[in-house]
Amino acid sequence: MKTKHRTKDLDQIYNDKQPENINRCINEATKIDEDKPALGQNFCMPCDKYFCDEKALQAHLKQKPHKRRMKALETEPHSQEIADWAAGVASRKRNREMISSVPHKKKATYDDAQVSMAYSEAPNRGEPNLEQTEDEYEQSYLAVD
Image (cartoon, rainbow, N blue to C red):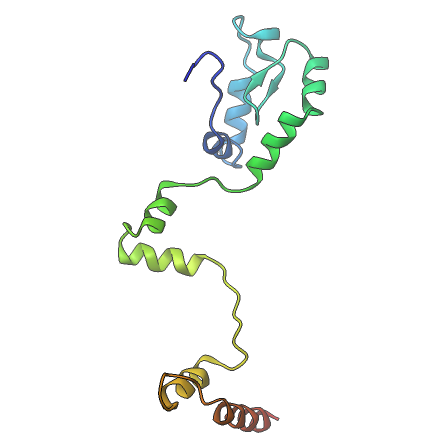
């Protein structure tokens, strides 16, 4: 891969956009430098590009490549920890932490104790005894009122 037009990767830019790093990054990017176009004053941080004047920068902000880059930066980039977890390489403790941090939707209508009890008492094949579960659910619902 050629490195002449190489820009920062998405994970590096994502880290630069974090509140603790943004001021440092802006100061470094807009520091006067004679080797950069317009002395380095017209800079697009998400695209990691310098422009020769303000008009060129404003035109760039309206273009599709800039908008695509902004959309790509909305989501958190992949990290090595997530890749290790997906491959099953991470430790058990880290696996539990990752699983607990992943939001999930609960589809069961009964609380977990009643569902697990129905599965354990069901005859054959581990199928739940739904009639028993519904009766217990109604009793617990009436007891609350």
